[in-house]
Image (cartoon, rainbow, N blue to C red; front, side):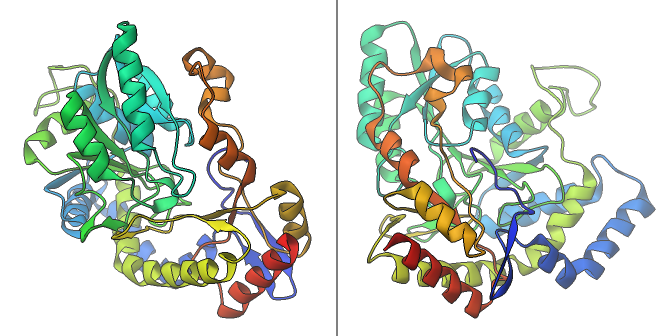
Length: 387
């Protein structure tokens, strides 16, 4: 599997049915509240740009410490909006990790710019600041492209090394846009994702820790002066009256129904995140002796969207674990620079850490509705398969 998890993936085990992501259990818990929210939208009839959009934006900013937020159609739209506002264009180089979902590269290419693939740290699975610096130097030496922006990805919910990245970006004159599609709720050095860099894109795809019931996303900013332009870009580049195009834009709006769902899910998000972190701590403790769980930076807290680890003989281990009724997924079997759509942007030298991680990594169930017995069973099964 090279992309988002199959959110209906589940298996039968001697501990009952284990889901990779259990949206059904969550929905049973909050369905009456969700239905009240959706009924309110039906009653006022503002299916686009309803009052729930602005309410959600205010709560996202308040929750993260950001100066403001712009709700939008998807995590991909959340990447494109600030890139358009920055006027990233043909001839510009945008530096991204190859070990990520293809949305990051697609967002860059939509602007006309060129993605430059950077290797990752083999322990954190996030972009390697040293290789970033090397890739910038290569682009400058070649002279064909203008280094313009870097998009670190908070892989599986763990914040990237923003201190090192910001230092490099400042030295090189690059903008920083965080791809926080998986890291809502995470933080670094007592600041939350959404308030770590000038612009942060996040996704509310249903399988995320905070997920809608369809596609949705948001861009968060540290500077309120970005909001007017971002809102214009998401509405076809129009002015406040929505009649005249004043810049290039596209239809990047979030539907009001999705905002209504997210508002209710935000009410239980912190409680769910605490349980996710307890499960991740148990996994880390159990797996560290025989596998390589993701390492987080000092001072970092993961948003725990997914739990992934590296093991030798990954495919055999996964097959054995699946046979015992534990569902798994693999992020990511094929690095972006190895995909046909992005082959023309592949680096001259292979990305060694990216290659090694993609051959060994897999994901285990991670959601707050796993029972303690199921968590213990998953640990036992993985340990037996990997031993």
